[in-house]
Length: 580
Image (cartoon, rainbow, N blue to C red; front, side, top):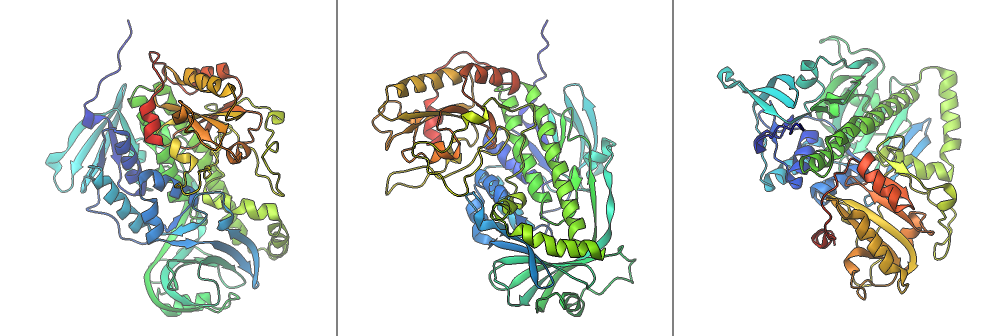
């Protein structure tokens, strides 16, 4: 006898613990997917403290999904360049304008401002945060999790409630992590940091941030906050945080002294938001514990260099949200949720290792190693390929799931023939995308006078199957490709198919809603698909499958991607209308 899974009331589907940027992102995404949830936060309201300020280019793509990207860019400040300098020389340079992305920048936007945009969006969708509400305890159940929740100052309000899933977004001191008795392995850094916001008068360009290394104690990092010469100062002090009463004074004189002698004359004024803090690098060993998922600082903390951690947590929320939606709606089997840890844990490890190595690199004290760093890195940095790769390593676009068992690539190298027909060869051709990588998001060809359209507009909140036909618009094969696309997705929900054809317009085709015009072959070229192929893109923008055999794709969808096959149905024209 088959046991039916327990049915949960709408308000007991998902509990989000923590209403920082990670919890708010998850809440907005779930709301947009139509999933019921409850989000609680022990604080009385949004934080106003000085926190993260770097919004990566990849994170802006997530903000676009939240419908707050344009507001964020409008309120923030675009940092186009970042450098590491020593002895008045740039030893590493990041040029974010080289990014192949909709937002080629590093956005400077203080975390409280980003949270305010998220709160406004959540409230506009009809959601709300339960402030002054704490998680006291949790119990794992066979078919969910029980949570003991209390309203602040009212012990009589404690009540056990059962939820299908619980998402821990409650920060570095996570109650969820402690109640699960999870180890948080790692160690503190043997230094501490002094932070402040200040007006800086200097000769650097206004849209550039920099690390200044040198013989003086620690390093100094500056990042612009706006176009008016306001900067975030970040000073490393290369020893343990002294006890209260023995720490440096957080005043203008102290910060000015620490900035002097860095190879750049900086005159500071109007100091504010000063603080001192010690940092650690720690990480849990498992992001999923049955019905409980950890993300953000609840799962990992590390060096602030590179501004990775808030952005990493936002990407984790983005990865999990669509999977919860697919399982809750019955599109996929619950085994899909296992891919959250499988995909995100290696990324978190890579981010921690990269930040840790970069921290060690710029805090070197051994003079022979310092000399090698200062003299060899500029030689490597000046290479053109390195210049193009460096910004993607900071922006979040280079993280991938290529080693995941949840993606599949059946294309051979000789089948990735990019530079044929209308595909013009360039001096620096972009590499072929692989399953597990972010799908290249490019602006599609449109007729003169029409509004620009990005490929990502087709796979938001759904899977997108791209059928690269490598065929002329007038070819009799186009109808066959459309029929194949329809057949491939028949019986599955949450997926749309589009055939990419060599034509100036889709208006002459009865099946135009299933076509993407690609007359200049920009899409064929970018996906190295001159010979035709199938590319399946997930709702989070990652490539799930690449190949030429429709049967292999069908097997992948059922067995690897955990899709549940439905009764055969006609092509979902409504989904096309929404995407278009």
